[in-house]
Image (cartoon, rainbow, N blue to C red; front, top):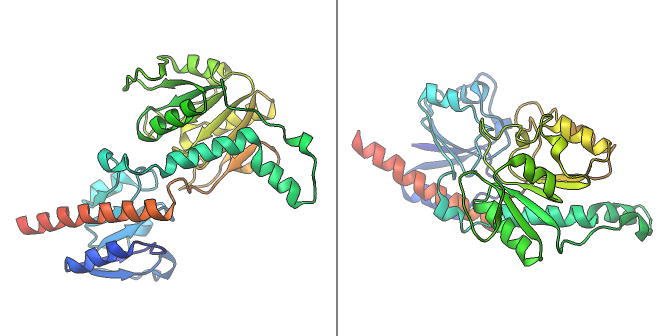
Length: 315
């Protein structure tokens, strides 16, 4: 059975050895190397990351595809209905909570974004690169006694709550599915918006969370608050956020994801990054640390191999 890795840069050597050890034919290529109108009928497994939105255009290359391996927790870069229609199994990290508890990469990155935003670090750095040395332009705020609202108090959100407590912040959270007595639960999202100096989003994208912060509720947001988002871009209705930034109702946004990232990249935040000083955008690198990526790839490879071989035995 051929396994084709379409995004092989820095892919785990241990995972490659596992595929080969278990009698899979491991090969590497790239999306750009796939030849137009050519089919690859022998490929039954592909390995992907986040380079492409996986639609019919991409899957048309592989008429006999059975499995997709993607070491991410989110799946909004994949047409899930199409996979169901084509009977293609998708292997993700989502749901493997015990393993994911060992991976703090996204939480660490989220905390880095918060520190950069509240201390104005990247803006001061760019100022110095351009020959400036005016400290008065970049006076930030300290974290002690600030109120942070964690939206989604599971894995990444829980780590953010712990980091916040270590910096003597007052930690509030909104999560209808969690009760944690170590932090202050707020049952109404609008109330959380109104009381917190910083909002940090850590939820999966679904019908319930899409445009969670939107034109209907953003007017509740506390003046001069900061927003951190390392979930998915569609959690925020970006046009409303940009409007509040321009009107100085929000002091800053730091995000690792943008709305429409995998389809059209028509992001209101991205379009304004050169016009508004207090926006930080990074290219979805929250989980992209070498050790975390290797661990995730090794875990998912071993899990997928076990499931695929078990299915083959049953035939």
